[in-house]
Length: 283
Figure 1: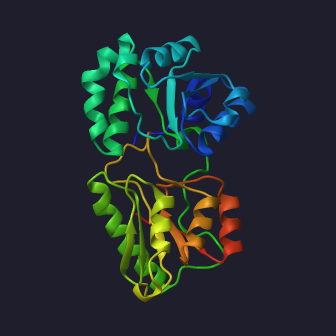
Figure 2 (figure 1 turned 90 degrees about the horizontal axis):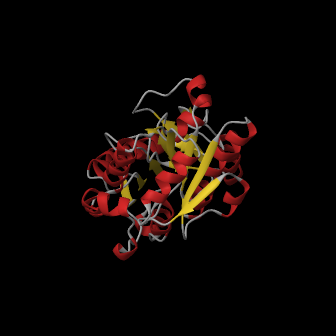
Figure 3 (figure 1 turned 45 degrees about the vertical axis):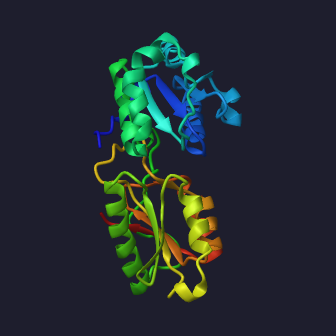
């Protein structure tokens, strides 16, 4: 993980937000606007969020990286942040611009790799173009999960044993660049996250017959070992708690200081409403 810039560096930077799905890119854009700081929200055709028109923005095709770089430079952007979940593009080589043709030998092999390797490679491309890369957590304070119990319900000894088992599974899974989450109940693995994401994992775990579930269980999320924290930190929010409840789990645990919580107070309130624990697990 790179060292976080100090407040002065963050405020002087002209930030380009590469916006994916979810609330995170919107929160960054709203924070920059509220503080009168310069920024540009960039999104890709077919995946531009509905709120983007309220902010300085550019929407480009995946096949036109030259247009993306030109928009960033035209806005004076010197610092770029990835924010939000991004789907793998279906590229049409006949639509490639000259920049895409130049970068194709480097980018196309990345699409056959895991998410972390892909995003790390794209980060390298941006840096080679002269942009500084920062993590979303470096632009918004208070996003990283705090340690310990965060909700009224506390994780008991059996919950903690499940968290420890899930943490070991996620470490092994992440070392293969596959996923960032696992569901464990009474020491039994009910599911591992893959390309489909956390919601699909929770739906799968929730469909597990009760006879195979020794107890309600826990969802655990953490960064992959050696992951570049600037491009793909895992995140949770109130919707994660709702999905965990629907799956019949007892709670959600995350790596303390290594997972983004999008709206800690709202997430804590949702955990309390649903009677779930919310726990920051130490590294």
